[in-house]
Amino acid sequence: MDKIILENMAFHGYHGVLEEEKKLGQKFFVDAILYVDLKKAGETDCLNYTVNYGLVYEKIKEIVSVEKYNLLEALAERICKDILGSFKEIEKIIIKIKKPEAPVAGIFDYFAVQIERERDHIDE
Image (tube, rainbow, N blue to C red; front, top):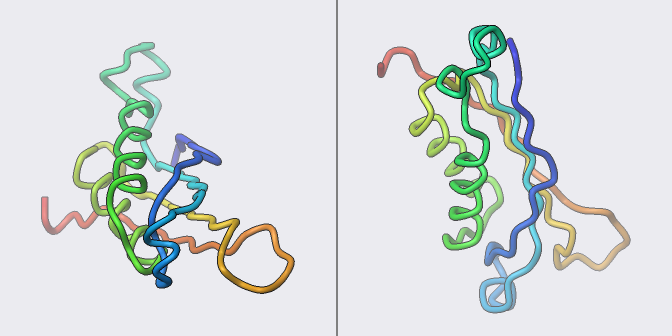
């Protein structure tokens, strides 16, 4: 399956269990891989046959920047549900959320969760 890749999107969000995380917020980096059949878009050079990744970016930005979750798992689940619900062309999505400033005493690049969800064809 073809892919549209949105990598290392940076947002300020208020996700975490600690009160300081909820008040001050911190940086989050999000990667998204959208599985879409891109053959017709490639043949026709027409946006109508693909997914407008600018709109996907805006949806992810709104969820990460405005909503609040204790767990990255819940944030990732919310993003997947919204993107699959909004863009019928997407068959599968992989979301990775990185938290480089996690409140852990140690040296690390980031902590992250990655989830993969597929469209439920039974609901369509």
